[in-house]
Length: 264
Ligand SMILES: Nc1ncnc2c1ncn2[C@@H]1O[C@H](COP(=O)(O)OP(=O)(O)OP(=O)(O)O)[C@@H](O)[C@H]1O
Ligand SMILES: [Mg+2]
Image 1 (spheres, protein in one colour):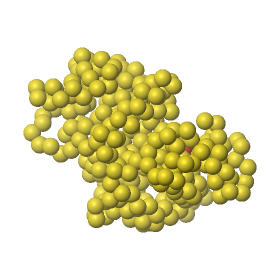
Image 2: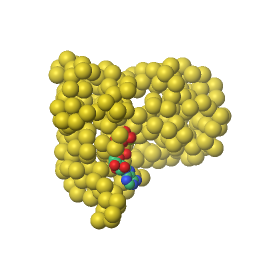
Image 3: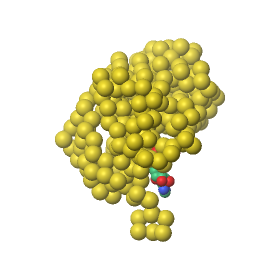
Image 4: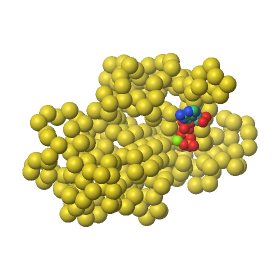
């Protein structure tokens, strides 16, 4: 279980450009929950994920995972149990290393000892099996540098790597936004498959409300660094895009027509 307690994050604190990106987020996430996160530009979605991953250190509050307050833990230490996939397909993998070297690194992240940078035959077999699941033919390209792959192939590989050692928490930040619609669908199918097979606790940020409704067991809407909507299970299943828009409008009491959230 993950408890986020009154999480506050400032940028440029006490400076002229001070921004309060998270203004007191309280959230309890049960093991195995698949949460979709929506909200307008600048709502704090990426900041929330970055604070969980330790990329940004929060200013107030606590992040407690399985009873442990991980707030002081640096990013690399959290990376052992947090998997991430970002919007940019270039960020999740290392271009100059081969597919199998990238996968070996992801494997080592789980702090398993004895796996050298070279890839042992047993692991190679496992990597090939996993890659074959993608249906992209990557299992025959283990020795290819990742820089040779397309954006969609790289994103699929990143997704696989993020879940190679079962993470306590999987963070997806608009991970299909930079892909063409067909590839995006493929990555989303893969996401659904991996998350449900491995029962991964997942936070998935999306700007696509249809996706936010179709995926997951819980939906959060963020605005101005706060959670303004939190719906689960049955209530989520009965929600429509129009409901979401009117809830957003009610919360704001302001016109939101120009918002990117409404465009998808
Ligand atoms: N590194 C940073 N330095 C200064 N301000 C930042 C930084 N990162 C985010 N912010 C500010 O924090 C607020 C929240 O940004 P965040 O990136 O979390 O929004 P978001 O919900 O992910 O938006 P988007 O949908 O555009 O990705 C915004 O006001 C943003 O300008
Ligand atoms: Mg963002």
